[in-house]
Figure 1 (spheres, rainbow, N blue to C red):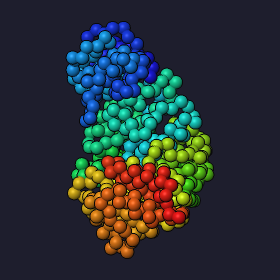
Figure 2: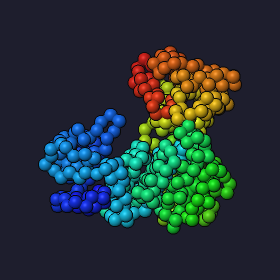
Figure 3: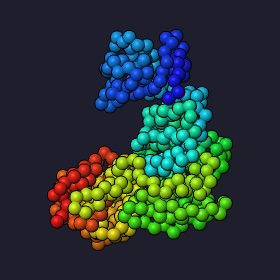
Figure 4: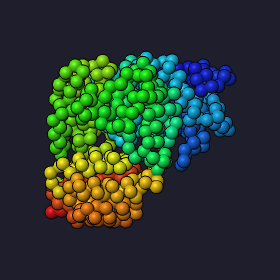
Length: 460
């Protein structure tokens, strides 16, 4: 963060009362991460309210506190606001508009946005100083904190923008309006909260509406709902995908257990470059194409943008992460999150691999009235993708199991994760490939942890 005065911070969050002449060197929302020179924003959470830990923040070196209610005796300045979360967003907007001169890249989509964010960062950091969120810092907390992490020399600021309802992404674009906006796809993630996939498209398209109209929208040519967003902006549009008419497209895709090889073609300048990345899953070709398109639009040559991805590997855990297991079993840990489209993409990817193919799947959450039909659709797809052994965990996956069996697949339904660990422990053989995927709240990564560390876990 570029150091600022406490007076500037107070004015940015809407407080006009005079404050001491204090230099602010960073922002934290967690008393455990406060370092000397930070301001703590006390944002109440579901489990912890930092208002009860203000003395700890002061002891750790906080130079000021932004709170929703005064009360605790401290020796550092206290700024009282109505809403600490909103105040954080106001500060981030002020900082972005008054202190930064970098290009801002915003990324959203129903799936693939975190992987795309990581790939964009890898492309751009080869070209200039780049700040991007670690993990999935993509909410009304994570986006401001990412902005505030930018420094004087930052050339590119990469922001991942998520939503759980209409208006969420629009709010984030008011904090920082992207010069380059990427939409990876529109799927059924959160469909139960919004009422239908068309409503998801409306919410995702808020990124295109809120972007810099003099910038560039980078859209997935293979997704009709994404392509329809071009009517929602005056910005220039660039497309990526496998479609023959995509501006930046891929050809000759070859998937192996550990890599993806493909040719990148920028049809606008007839540029052609071969790329190999250390990712599992053909759907990651689209994520890579989006990242290359961003690099080109930020000033790189097509060849330089493509070659910057050579050797790229996942930077965020539990996204098609290849994990060696005991005795020759390979786990594909994709347990960070799940929706119907990402489930089917992962199943197709594992179906392409050699060895006995297992899919251990948990429930996809937030699908509402569509849940049974969408779980059943995934079960049918598992059968069609050539999965040898399907294991469905939890009550919500019964329709998945039943649909797979109806399609002739070998499927087992189990009530909980512990049962699945024991089934896998007894059934896995050397050379097996095991996909593990579910919504984050299911916690299915525990299977990978147990069996990858279990010396007796894989079969003889």
